[in-house]
Image (cartoon, rainbow, N blue to C red; front, top):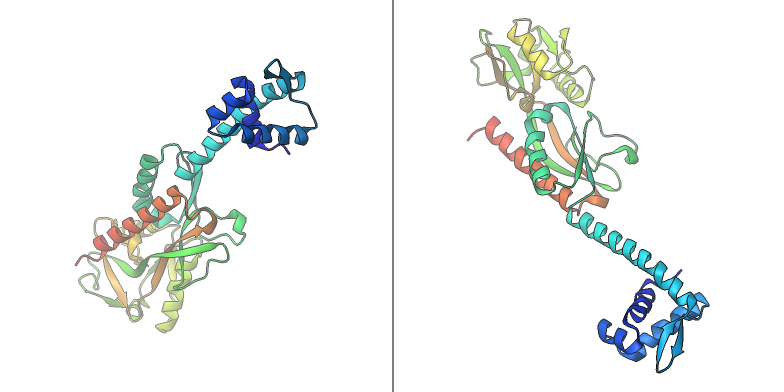
Length: 303
């Protein structure tokens, strides 16, 4: 493989017309330039320069190599520029996965930060309720729900963002609507509206809490998401229990009351691929996620 540095020196000699002029242009000694050219000739097995009077001139092979070097060095310069842009976050892509209940609550602010600071970076957003088992299928950054202290696996780091306790969403006229809190066991005989069609970790977390409280809830209506479940509550069909963040925008005529003894809690993490953790867009994404998490907690649990 050709030594690119020697190729640059040789190209300077051809462009400058002499060893001495090339040395002056490059800031080298004439001896160093001669050594680079000699090494390139040994490397290629070609006679690249020939004496001409008191100076030198390229041979036919030297002319051909110099012409080819122009394209090589130009493409190398473009590659170096691209690498610098990637390091600075001026180009490239960032994949960001998130689950449904943080989509409208958190993603607009995070995306605004990224598109403002890194307009040349393509954002690939994906709705994902679970962390893929295959590491190659995972996003650069994924906002995910998991149990406290979970291990994201080799090559990934989990950054804790928020602990999100559950609340019960009730119609305004319900007998528990004026309470500061409701024990989970008190909801055993209520008409439950399911809100997790995917049967994900959030639902399993709730069912485990109900088991700890001594009952298994009977779901009378099944909804696919939190907004639909809360609309059913507004219509007087029943009540639903969900994480507090999911109840940030309550329909009119409903109220959210904290659930206690036990209080189900889901932990929210940003799972980051270690290989890209140092890049400016990922650093900015993690910083923005932390800021929106803090802002969410301040809104949900004001001092």
